Image (cartoon, rainbow, N blue to C red; front, side, top):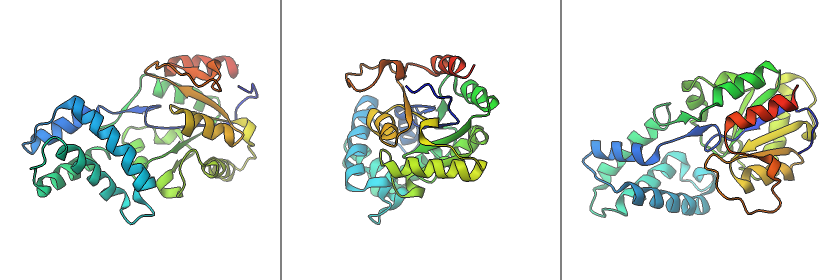
Length: 248
């Protein structure tokens, strides 16, 4: 990674700063409406349906007429019906509405260990912080409810912007927002993006001439030869130690 002192650091959200207990929340809310579901099958079904719907209706259905709420309702319907085709649609509508509401709050989102400490450390060192996330319109509310929104100069979501990572334009927009808000001139080589996906976050930022770091909470094997091993961190505490060296 370029050792230029960063002036802007942006974060992905899901899998980077925030986690969710998907099986727990889907099972709990399903049970409230009399539905039982096998948690491991649920997780596999969710992943498959998420990936497929993202292809058919990218950016949470922003341009296909589906819209983000119906996008998520479709996920919920598909996931539950794959285990029980006889569930009434009216019941699944209630489950979907409850899940959408839950996932708009801190009840269904949890910060990874070290999140607050890292943001506080970077904030004290006068680094401009931002969020670049392939997310829908609820992200602002979620970050406020988790009490971390105040650390960020801006929150840039794919749904609001209309393009998603790894598109170079979303990184260009992040620079524009930083410079406008802070009345400074930050260039790409002074920016770092941190995320958990190789294509969207790491290479997306690199292609925009930014620096990039990869957070690998699950310590999965990374076989991509173009990812520098020094850019990979297994937790946010190690990432903070990296910045303590970089910013001293």
